[in-house]
Image (cartoon, rainbow over all chains, first blue to last red; front, side, top):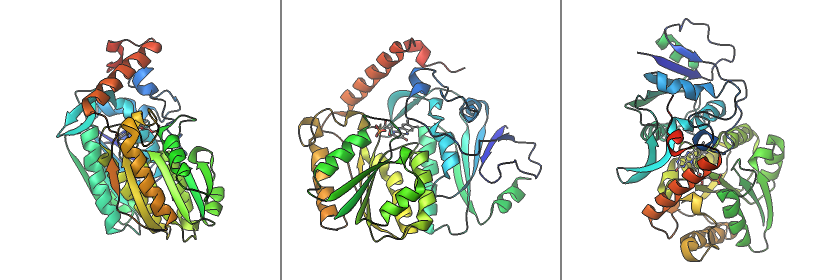
Length: 164
Length: 202
Ligand SMILES: Cc1cc2nc3c(=O)[nH]c(=O)nc-3n(C[C@H](O)[C@H](O)[C@H](O)COP(=O)(O)O)c2cc1C
């Protein structure tokens, strides 16, 4: 069972021992997706911006689970984590198919990770948490994840304690 | 009446968001309209403008069921400094056919307006964003979208709130899908990528 962790708690890496996980270190200010669709029609499956944050997409098909530790921001990810996800849509194909009456994309990979989102923050409202619960489900449909969950914590330390 | 329209598409030009923003602006009579692009707007400039307006309209593409990261960053950085009685309106457009798929992104925009102390005016989700602009708003496949822009413009001018609503072009889903697939094949071909090449999974 291989778990890939992306987190926005500490730029310099986390000091508790998480060696049983694959830790993705994103850059300090993740460059945004520019909407070029190069990851579909130029370098299929790869982001055209080669700055290290593109590597997340390349790791996704190799793991069983993606675990996201993020500050809850308007009911979703914080901006840097969102930047990495935006730049990872090469994980799926440009072609459409219909899933339970709604249009979605065809999958590029047969093996796809499940999604576990762990959100923290001091002033999370119930409404924001409800959005995040729906977000993980919507992302799971779009990314073809076999399983998904979202949970909430007052502090990042609470999350790290649980992971040790 | 002063209105700020913030374009949240990262595309330098020709985005669906830009076309929707222009279509809305044309329906706002002689209001004083400022247009900002979130890619080129700093937090201070944005906050100063928001603090001086009656309505903020954020027009953006749906990215992974939410806001594009650069727009999210701008709104997140600004929220603590906004002191404005402006109402917030938002138009999200997406690649899939159903406009309804923008609903989570519009919820996020509501959370932004709540956390910055502004009142939520109305949200509109536009599906099949790839088609926006194929005809003038209000005619042919853009008929519904024209009507939706009329409705939102009226609410903005009357300083009224409205229910969030979702639409797609007057165009069948299967044809949208076919057109999209043809366009991917031809764009890939232009880059020297074959039909099989698009599918690569190494
Ligand atoms: C990184 C990225 C993520 C996207 N995620 C979604 C999505 O979750 N659902 C969807 O329907 N369309 C999605 N799209 C498609 C865009 O919303 C669509 O192309 C839109 O029309 C672009 O608007 P614009 O021209 O204003 O930038 C995504 C596009 C990109 C580049």
